[in-house]
Image 1 (tube, helix red, strand yellow):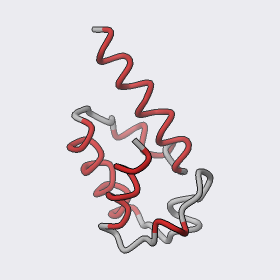
Image 2 (tube, one colour):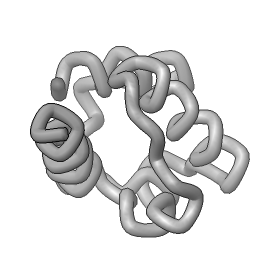
Image 3 (cartoon, rainbow, N blue to C red):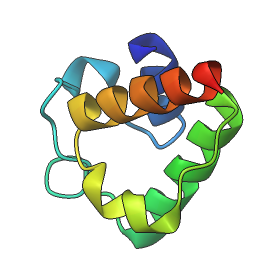
Image 4 (cartoon, helix red, strand yellow):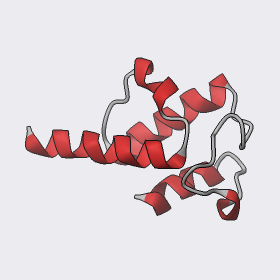
Amino acid sequence: MKERILTILEDFGVDRRAVTDHVHFVKDLGFDSLDTVDLMMKLEKEFGLRIPDEDYHKLTTLNKLMVYLEEEQNVAYAE
């Protein structure tokens, strides 16, 4: 999962070597609101799930994003 996310981040010009689990997308990587929306859309497509707009503000670091995606995938598999 992490590799898939890092590949998506590279689409935004992010050097994967600069990304740690706790790197903040806005504060550390310079993402703005449009980048965030674009990132979420790419993640939805990559992982085949829907990320509600109200969850965007929670997904500020790679670690938080991975935990969220794992939980959402587990819910989808359980249904």
